[in-house]
Image (cartoon, rainbow, N blue to C red; front, side):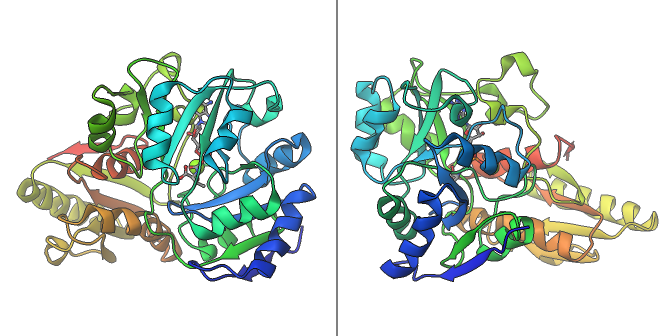
Length: 352
Ligand code: TXA
Ligand code: MG
């Protein structure tokens, strides 16, 4: 067990001496969790193989699933990528810093363990002032998966990080809850047209406007598990985002969905289960269960995304055994929200 220290920092104007304290851990091969605009990451020096090894261990993460490398300046991609296609340069100018991760052919400088021996590397420049300050102050590329135990919902607050990783990491920079709440979009730019491997903070519609042609990998919109040989990203084959409770998604038009969820909750509570419903502002009044929570309005998917992982964790803290969640429209951020919910449910999807 390590002692995990909590360093509170201002989210807009991080106090430099506090950031420096955290950066010293990174420079010495330690592990520091830090906020990004999407979720909290767990950082280690990307070019230090033993630091990266301890990163996988702290999360219980399989060694075949590489982290995203976080940089402090766009030009740092030149050290990590073997080539930077013209389309990538355009996206970097437009969306970095921001919630867009690009997959490049990797350079030789990166240790094998950092990229799980793939011939590609995932890179992003985050927008959060604390993340940028930590990377720049460390003068390192920071490898950072989301700061949860493997398979759990991603952390959107320092409390979530501590509940999974207290005693396993050196420090967490606590700057309050993150803004976006779902992870970055992962875009493979080594193929033409570029392909979204994981929908996230930058929507398909926005990328399509910038690139004209962009594909979505079938796994990213799947409603049932995709065979391993079809996966293009290690993250597509691992269990993800799951609360301890069993999660079930009901999809369909709002009226039929509400009716179906009312049936399901009645039936499940007759069987003595502790039931939770993950609803929206428009529908929350229709349900009776041990816990009924609203993600926010269906018309404000940004707010829904920001609440999603925190609510899944709240059900766990109330010892809910089965969560029944409403499906949401797959437009804009909704694509990322539904991807996370479906995966978290293990594709237990009921059509209403
Ligand atoms: O918003 C985010 O992206 C957060 C914050 C901390 O930046 N990070 C994050 O990292 O979500 P992680 O490790 O939880 O997810 C990274 C995803 C995984 O699905 C992984 O398989 C995929 O990116 N990935 C990493 N390297 C890859 C590569 N070379 N090719 C394809 N997919 C890759
Ligand atoms: Mg993750």
